[in-house]
Image (cartoon, rainbow over all chains, first blue to last red; front, side, top):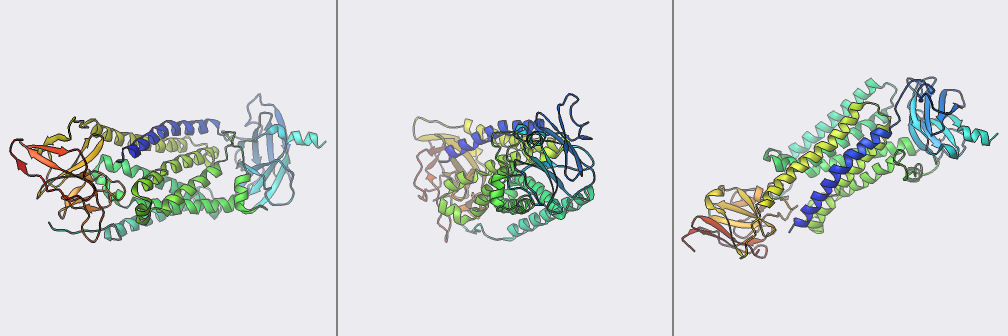
Length: 146
Length: 346
Ligand code: FES
């Protein structure tokens, strides 16, 4: 009577046992490791550009392959880095903002921007104050903008 | 036959279970919030609650999913199974707090609605490293809500146990979504290898427990009796324990045999409540009692004693020369069958 249900249950578990550890290991492999200063945190042969944050409360480096390192000059409560394809002003997070990860002053956060060639803005936002506190245009965008 | 029938309802055991779960959840949340504040003094209260509820809900889901195989492997875990649904509802409530705090923290301060922000802030479904992990968490929360909302017996009755059981298997989908949500989200900023090993260990432990439980089931299935005739020889009478069930697979169906004060009876192994294994139950107060939540059936007609009317299929049983023989054709649920007593030669 419940043999089909039991078979389904068995197959779900076989699939799960095979898939989940693989997923966890793959996610571990692609995580951006944390390190010291933004430039030092990049591999020696990394090609890219230093970011200019406005105001200058953070330092950053964006490699050509999309790897991004950011260090805050000073502590900001619960600072997060976001990627936005648009140029916004003010203290609200842009509606298209993509969360990249947490940043702080102790270590360079190693993040990754979704599409470095497309251009956009790295937005630093504090969950403590619920306000954008710095922005940096990606180098591609800076060149385009002159 | 004396009949002391206790239906699945609020009783002392359930209250104790719920109090223990509530106290444990409050203790775990408090420990994580206080410990988190100590380790990371810059974290806001919202963030500490978000982290604590996320960890707590994830840990609870592990416990919920481990109870089934543990109870199958060792009867001492059966009391946990008795009230597993309450643990599931608590898991959803803690996950809901986590979801609400996340939505407020990350999506409530923009100029679009929370849901619009959630679904439009990251649409990189084509990228593994940037996969929209928050949407995975949202999907898991929806599944957990469905499970919690249909956890009451009202839904078991109305959806039928088979549909209910199929629906509740989506707990595994919720688990997979949450593992992906954690691994591709919060853990991307976690450098600690220990944390990653814990995540991997949790998934592997659950997998191992279910594999071991499946082995026990497969062992029962291997003992399947495929007779050419309907009259199937199942075992020696002496092999049946007094007032406890034993399960036999006859022509692909599981049959529960009980030796009780009035003789030997056979009923379907599938409880009408949530498909619990009646053959792993006992005779309590003259009734076959399901090991999962205590539904009871009279051995001689597979019917719950009044005022209840749940029924399971019954089977004709004979005892010939000390061996138990079962007619493999199930009788309609609730059909009375006189319990078998030893008889001489066929
Ligand atoms: S009493 Fe719940 S499954 Fe039998």
